[in-house]
Length: 234
Image (cartoon, rainbow, N blue to C red; front, side, top):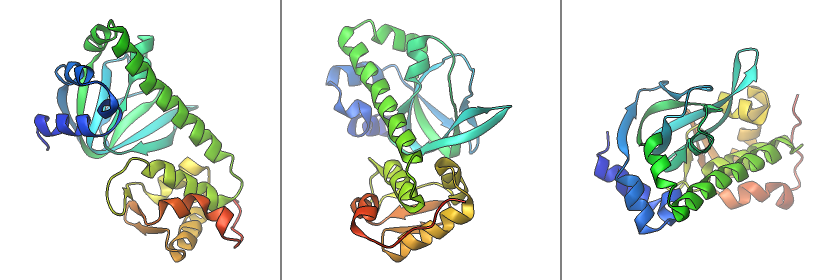
């Protein structure tokens, strides 16, 4: 488990809060509490009343949405440093997604009552609103990715989106092939075949519950620079 000081340093140096004023950074972090979650433990569930915002500083979160009939589908995974929960906080309502620990994690928790005090300052309110806009933009990108007909390119774009902002040489996306298949609306064998093709090109290196991104720039422009046909979803 990382210390609270280390967690605050990470929040200041990366992610949404790193681009905000020193005043907002101090005001937010002074109100945050350090929380830990076990593997597969739920941070909040669809329909839970808002308890505030969270900042993932260590580990991986799994984000799921209700698909009807009591079924849930994985929408994405996220790695540090990642803020979430502001939508429900602004609405003063329930969370619309389920977020759980993909593996043991540490997060900073900003309670809802402290969020309410912070947004009384107009500049702080605008900063939180921009966080929500960033998440909306990410949702649009994910929807656009699902409309890509070329299977290999669809997977490549999703991996590039998951790798955005990650440190490391190469960056590592902690996702299983089964989860990646569900995110892309494909079967696992189709994803395995596409990953094998991307690996042969030197773009990715699949491993156990992770995928290393060896060349992110070429990964997203593969369909433009290479003429080899891809398999189609079945």
